[in-house]
Every structure is written in structure tokens, then in C-alpha cells.
Figure 1 (cartoon, rainbow, N blue to C red):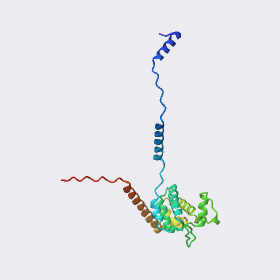
Figure 2: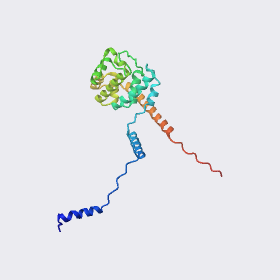
Figure 3: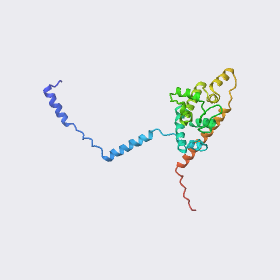
Figure 4: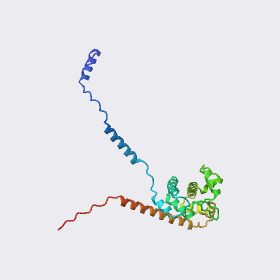
Length: 233
């Protein structure tokens, strides 16, 4: 049966009048707003990226004379940690290369003219600066700037690692030069491992220091175990 319009509309209004109208949602109180804001802040802190620990790196660097002041040493540790990870290297590996190259002394110059912490030849430094679009002014002696020197050194090691596809060979190329390593490979000669082995020993040693540091920190932050009550018999 089809109801006429004149009858159906009043019937709809009558039915609608019987429907329950929900109460308006009350506005949140000041305490509720504050609690919600605190919860959101807690969530954002929980998911915020955490800085990598560098205490073990500072401990390692403290054993060397860098030729820089203490504040610069601390800043340098943070820089090495960040720059290493940009290229996918453990900071401990870069520390090991620097240890082997210069013992962290910023003003080192080798008898072959390699300069700074990562012992970079000026001509190589210029080429690396161009490849990384870094400003290069020879008069400013940029390789004595530890941040420039280390960034270029890490970039260079990354290039060598990608070129040779093997960290040990890349380290040998860092020491002897890639041209010589390519020639030895082509001639079927054995690549010397002394330099790479020395770097890797330091690398493993620094990783062990970090592991001990983490273990000590974990133990110190754990709640002490409750002492069981003694029962007198």
C-alpha cells in the first residue's frame, strides 16, 4: 500500500518525535586536557630517535693526545658517531682507522705528505672534496680541520669498500692506494694484510669496550634483588 504524501509526512513527524535525542557530549575538563597532552608528549618521546651512546668512544679518545682541547674532543666523538653511520660504518671501525693512521693526533704529517687524523694526501683530499661538493680552499689547510679530514676519510673508505666489495681489501687500498691494489689483483699477487689486520684488531677491541660499557650500565640501572628475610628456627 502506498500512503499519500498528505498522510505520510505527518506520520513521519509523529514517529520522529518518539525517538530519543542523545545528550550533548560534555566539553573535556582542564584536567582531562592536561592528561591527554601529557600522554601525547610521552608517546612522542617514546618514539623519538635516540642518540647513539658515545661514552665508550670518549673513553677511547681520552687515551690519546689529539692536539685539540677537551671540548673539541667531545664534539669530535659525536661527529665521528654521526658521520660513520651516515655511510653505514660502525664508529668503532672509523676510530680504529684513525688509531692506526695517526693515533688521533690532528696535526700529523707523514713522510709521504699525508695529513691529519685520517692521513689524507692533499691531492686526494681535493678530489674527494670535489666529489662531495665540499668547499676547498688550499690556503686554509682544510685537512687540518678534523671535521673535514674525517668526513673525507670516511667517504673515501666508503668508495673503496664499494669498489672492491670487501672491507679488508678496501682497508689495504686506503693504505697502499687503489691503483696499486688493482694492479696486484690483476697480476694475481697476494694483497698484504698487515694494515687491515691491525685496523680490525683495534676495531674488535673497541667493540668489546662498548659491550662492557653497555653491560656495566645495564647492571647499574637494574633494581637490586630483594634480600630474603631470615627465618629463625
